[in-house]
Length: 457
Ligand code: S2G
Ligand code: ZN
Image (cartoon, rainbow, N blue to C red; front, side, top):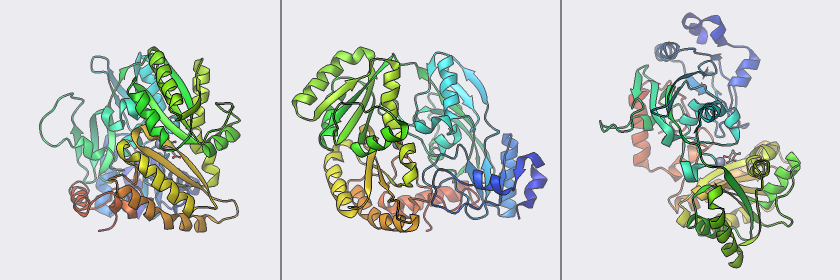
């Protein structure tokens, strides 16, 4: 069936060898079947249009593939689909200093864009541990967040224009980098976070901003889960935070062991907050720290004395995901509004303790955004299947606690395959019907990433 590809693309652009299928047919998840029929490498917008039109004519299924760092199976091809990799559409096409706009192809690696901006005295502020391999197209498809959202927002906030090829093979140029444009529905925001189910991003106008002043990093030992929110409140009322992350003692043990890093404090605490702020806010931060200690929320703290020490402290947070990957963790990526976080933390922590008495539970995340990463670590003597089945049993109870507070069962990692069948915990039947209607308009033959994100009607 996918032989028709060879009439559309050149031989160098089509691969069917087992190694390529296994490499490009997956993302960072390890719990889904990987079985694409081919991997293709378009090199132009015209190639992408031709591919989509071919897919509509021949009934092919297309799975977009960027840096393959996704955590929900959104880029996994498990049913003979054709994987469309943007590795060869990885150029920076234009830079307009007056607009502070960079026009990128989807295959530009996030770190490359960050460096491009910094080399011109500007800043692309969306950042996360996988920035060295994730691609802008995938960041847009999942509306990637990361560690600076509290100050700079999500990917969505930095996309001033999008050129897309819809599932019907139409090229849409959305917003064209304008600051203001009151001419109807802003369709760019439909494609941002659509996980490749509506069409392909083939160009993006990405906004840059001024470089921040030098940053300082603090790591605080925090006594109780809910005290993290009190500490957040104290600091937020005293200064502008660039980041407010957290991690548990177990997470710290895993990352210091895996990366052979020094512990940040002389003693241990149940939880740790990692804060980043402008150098000029040091006095305000010191005052907030002293108030948190006086309240008993914080037991100890360390302030970075150099860029190197700041980077080492950040490693304690950014290195967690990689450090626990060997335990094939069962991941939940939850969000509730900050105001609803304290009692949510108590409820879900109690639920996890009673549900997983035999498992190691690793907490970390962007608590400043109301976003928790809950990772249950697989015991070495348990099979992957049994472990996931056991964890799957508890997820509905956790999602019920999330839904009771109007929260999200997937804060930033997307839905993909992993959360698709739980989507109704966060989206109403009317919303799901509207989403299916939008998909029917933009991808009428369902060629775009079929089976992902939207549960079957
Ligand atoms: C984080 C990275 C992926 C993971 O560390 O903030 O979003 O493993 C995560 O959860
Ligand atoms: Zn995260």
